[in-house]
Image (cartoon, rainbow, N blue to C red):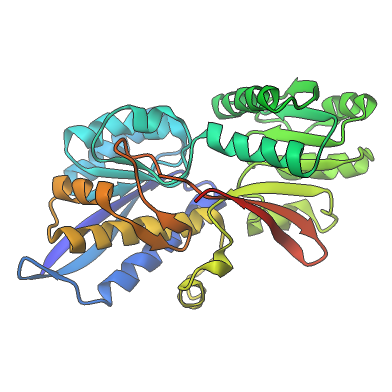
Length: 351
């Protein structure tokens, strides 16, 4: 028997990344039930999880630790800064790295043959959002708030650029601290400007505060949230009066997947399960690695990377394929609106 170690690196202080870890663990359990043999040896898969605390320096330490442990591939890291910090370490060791949540365009542009990005870039998601606002909703006056982080500011720039291309009308641009829960000042400006949609550019952290403050101050119109809004952690804190919310999530609606019911039945057995697009992407990433080894008939990381570049895989998140740089080819995004029945998919973009 040959043991194959797969790493998972993310900040464990966030519920979304912990739920994604559980999804990766579920995929490992599923793989070990398939009785997979390669090179005359039965494969036993094990997941090695490390907390990078969302810190680039810690991510480098974690990467070196996973390399020393003999991993074949790593799912991670969670955000763009930590993913980029760890990437050279994995590349030097010829280890496959698949990030399921980082969105920086620089990730596939590094040129590492074993680096893969499961989500599209900020520019692609911004294109989907602005298309929906301008062409579908026909929003006339749009406000933009970023959370002051590198991710938030970069996404905000993409929103501004894409709005210009579509002749969209941004009437207010505000920036807040990523640590604040006080949105009163920017919301009052936005209310006075008569915006019919507020675009929030940043992490899901404190998005619930923004959603509640918007209702409390009676700011009219819709609030468009970043990814993760459909998850249980957000809904647990945001309340139930959410009819003014929209969000974008990676992937197609999960109910369209032929394997969704089987996954959900198994995943519910996890201690604290919750389904978000990131749990689905983590589950897909492990299955990609396993299937890549089978198709390439090898557990060698270099051969695995070469196989992943050629693969076309049908996952829970839709069709998965990568271009020659490791970026997802034709990434899918779905716009959701909230109504009395919860989050409802209203439009899917991508192939």
